[in-house]
Image (cartoon, rainbow, N blue to C red; front, side, top):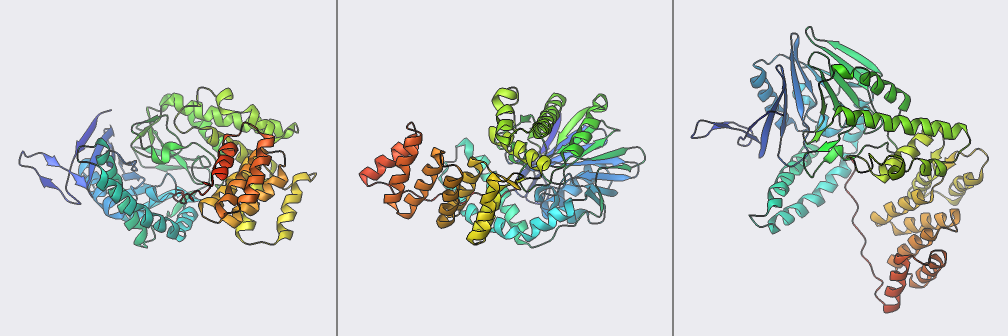
Length: 488
């Protein structure tokens, strides 16, 4: 991969004494990669997983794919693109999806036609309206990061990466604090769409559901480039993969697996025309083999889910049949894959095929909202219903309890852990989790009884043995872990 790399001072250019142009934007080094004679890909940073913006010159104007997510930096990148392509007739901006690190710089291209999937404008509005949580996280996180950086000695290899992360996170925080709504796409589509640019044709395909609701793939047939956004990568170029770290269907993210698979498989039929797959961030690469494997994986899970539902199988049986390590050993350690991601995707497919919703999430929502016992009991009754509206998984309910624990909502955590004990009275871990949370509140007597019950069901439980030993010694107090960062 041939790259042109230059360094420059914050938001402006200067010439070194040697006469070599050194470029840097907002303290982050600029990188320029030539993908084809009329195509440049640019990004900033050597360590952080920043978005890579691609610009393609056509006979009818320049097409830009994605922004970095900061208007000040994207304005500089637009000038770099014009310089590199020796023209400034920008015509289209295409967003591969609605996440802020790809769309927050849209205002820089407000004079262009902004294109995206039809779900992207709503996704952008929702993120903008919910930015308060992200702002609060950055306000807690940035001082901690500064303190960590101060502890690093000048020669520490980790210092450069941490310094760059601080600069990048500070930029994102400032963007959020600006309260500037990014420019929304004005041209949208639902399935597929073509953009005729004279000497180049851009084919846009919906590929949402494994990263965001409105993911798309973009095929530049003239140059043989397939842009896949943040949906997948099979190589990470550094230790901070960022958005490319997961290949998973998440609860709450809209899915259309049949359409997703149809479009992926249409693209695979044309693989002889594809010269290079281009990911949404500079530090991830995707091979054709990796693309094929990931499509085959989703196809297998979708077909297995439909067969299981048609044959009267259970979700628990399906999870066992599609276990990551035993069923997909070649992908188990591949970038983006994990047992949790596999589990989550199967559960989401089950939800889509059966129409059943996760009972764990419903209980979480009711308890968090302070709902009465009647509403909660109505959901609990679904476990034994002939045609249930909800499905229950012990580990899902448990995970919801720990979400409350992380947010220091211990009474709500105790409430949902008690429900899990009722749902799964033979599950040793249900007693263990309830005991752990009661111990945090100081209810040592009840916690001790529950740990003993847990050990009766699983005498090998290390957590139970350790807890009882701490209680015996009077050293049972534990710290509440801080809540995690908000989701991307």
